Amino acid sequence: MLTIKLPQIFRVHQVPRIFWEDGIISGYRHPKSSALDCILSSFQMTNETVNIWTHFLPTWYFVWRFLVLSSSLDFCRDAYNWPFLVYMLLVCLYPFTSSCAHTFSTMSTHARHICYFFDYGALSLYSLGCAFTYGAYAMPDRWVNSTLHHYFVPMAAFNSFICTSLSCYSRFPELECPRLSKVLRTTAFVYPFVYDNIPLFYRLLFCFGDGCTWNDATAGYFYHLFFALLTGFLFASHLPERLAPGRFDYIGHSHQLFHICAVVGTHFQLEAVLSDVRSRQAWLSTRAPAPAFSATFGTVSLALLGNLLIIGGFTVALLRWPGGSSILQSTVPEAGRPKEQ
Picture 1 (cartoon, rainbow, N blue to C red):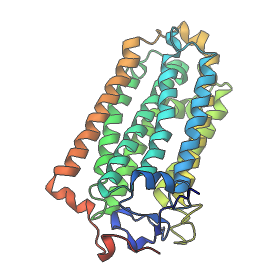
Picture 2: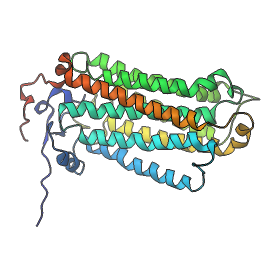
Picture 3: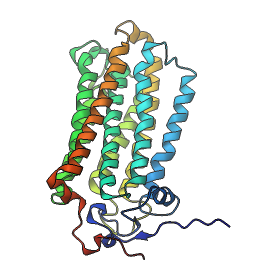
Picture 4: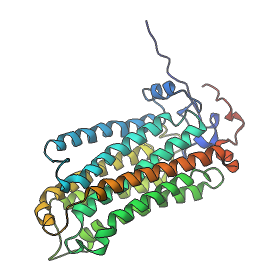
């Protein structure tokens, strides 16, 4: 009978320091796992298993929503729906990329950094997708055709380059200056979030009376912002494992919780945007020009290419920069090959 031997798991001091997670004591995978071991490990309980599945399963939920919507929205011929099409593609991309990053990040120290370079790039592109939909469907009535409206998406594309660059660079001082690394990475994602949501902040918090849009989307946007803020808090605080190291190694640590909050927030965002897409179409069609093919798909293509070039540049720096070897090394003597439990 065919039997499959699952990979061994290890404690924190048995793996190189670059693999350590704050407050996580056990459940680590071999830092030089094969691709097959990485895949098999997703079917055993490690400190990454829930991280993998909390983004892998939602990927297929968003793919399913995309396919269902394709039957009711004309994504090919109706230019009005093109920004929403871009958004849906990027919503499907970011959790899938994150799941792959968590799955294969223990193949080597190089692989760990490169996997998360791509993860950061996918999140940067998702932020651009949010800007596409907010600019096309969620802009406050009085801001439509304003200077901000015209430059909102191009600026978001530029922000995606800043986000990817800062977050990728944050991995280099991770061992020597962990606080700096955390600040850089947090800033990299807070900045585009704040920018993308300027129309929502104004529409939900400061816009009252005539010229303001209050519809079924409003509650969804409030829920989305709540879960987005909760996601950021969990990412920055490392709670609850910071308060009880070792208690939440497998289930309940902050990375798992912020994965769940991020997906739930994206769900509410999707439903809110979809409500605006349908309810504001007649009004927007008479006041704003239809999205141009070049402006929509040209912008996202250039952003994709630019982010890939940034990731490629940091990958080359990781492999060739003389000082880069420091982020691949461990300060503990057991860093060669972990001992089995």
